[in-house]
Length: 272
Image (cartoon, rainbow, N blue to C red; front, side):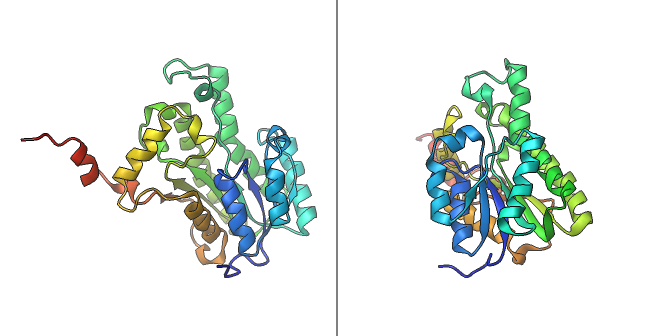
């Protein structure tokens, strides 16, 4: 049920690929709560066509942008302000891709050109986006920028590979740019560390189904859904969280602070 939490707010949503994407769920929820926004993804993702359905559903315009291109990002932000009729209130960064993961390279035997690409696409793209918005003075005072991350930034999940390094960098950028944007005009910058979620990107990680099952067994509340993450993002875009910034916010059913659960212990019980 809509409460109009984002009525009058305008933004950009990166990364909606299909209806499995968290960004897709965020777009649906933000629209339901009264927001207007531009949808963006890499040109190749837009050519796949599914995002056109989301644009139609939410009454949004599509603007292609390569998130590793400063020129594309500047054009995206300028065009978005033109389409929306003013500055932005929120941005969602939901971008992540590792060629090493896709090609099955081990963490100890990566292709370093691909490693650079992982960092550029999955983390430095956030810095580029923040910097473009900062220099173009594109954010309204008390605006909110959210990027999606994963707990592999803090703990070792071997098959998450170089994406773990990218997420650690993403969270560092959030803190450092969050300070700069807060000083400039009270813009908040945060990451949300979501439970493992069966998205197109996530399903490409080796052993991801087991990740999901393990997290479910460890988390007191169970894994947080993509829809639940969308609700959390909406709350972070809203005026209800005006003084939350530079934070990595766990949205994982308690997984991040659980050492071990009874459910996991049971699996290792030896019959006496």
